[in-house]
Length: 241
Length: 196
Ligand SMILES: [Fe+3]
Image 1 (cartoon, rainbow over the protein chains, first blue to last red):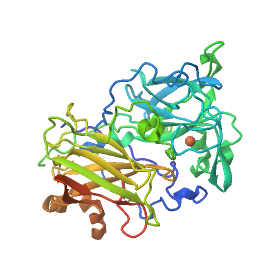
Image 2: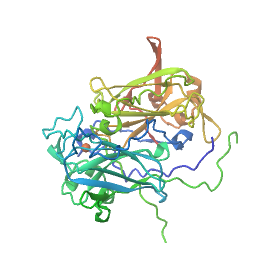
Image 3: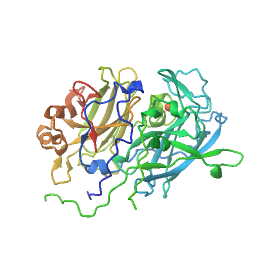
Image 4: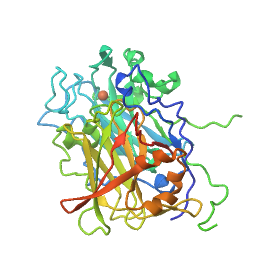
């Protein structure tokens, strides 16, 4: 198999550390030994092929993809942006998965017992592929904030969870999108696992009036950056050398 | 002019409801219920059929019952570009017991960058509430002792005793070859996690 360039080191000081006592669940779920640093092998640089049966045309439309005859209730929005790598190169044809609570802050999940009502027409699960230029979009309703047990009743800011595969195993990433202007963002213990204010800012989607669907939906812009691949200036050592 | 690169989008926990987006049927969501991503190999895929199962334990020894485990592996020939065997799977920990499980084939050996050989292994990613950035580990096979002893990644673990945390134990259960691989997030026997 042809050797390709390695991916740039992940800046662990930019990501949240494993142990963040302000977010209590991390206390017992965080390794105490240092991560072991190893060079990337062929498997780490190979592309994960998600064995999907093919995307449904409604997979990126959460207002309609769980319809029981009506539309999801809530503030209608389009979320769009570009997926790039750290060198600014677009990441085309890569799967994005999203999940979220409904407009009242309730998840359609067997373990969520929040008292807010379920919306019969909202499932909260979606996915889409980036196009040849790395662009993506989906339509949904703005999720509601919800309370959770941490320091008594903490409140999560409105957020959409998202998951990316990129073009190689080492680009795999799960994160969350927040909304510009939400006063709950700086109060959230999960947001505050991020050590750097600039990193938090990168998770805040910006209102994008120019891309609204007139008389239908507001738009938010959210760009995503995955790890970049280094150039190979010299060929790697061949097998047996 | 300084050389500038974009910064990677920072990670956030997958949270307790990660299944809605990744394994909706597990969440109780009646969509894509035909997908069973825990079965990587069915039909005529060549290779030894195996089951890989285990529990993710927290630092107090309790199962992490809302973990999502992803598995990534080569095919039986050690290839990652086989269109008939994508080599990717997902399994949710059981909400009652914490057990995750995959049905797959045993992978082949892989080349390493300096001409050495990597012993057969699968890579595992763990996502869960309380895990701020996913954890990356590997499972090697207990019946490949010589290959494991020469594996360049296992050998890069300085504390020799910790290498055993990456070895799944073979047994036969009802005629099914099963490798048991428990993952300890913290404390005694803490599993080795990688930064690659
Ligand atoms: Fe959430």
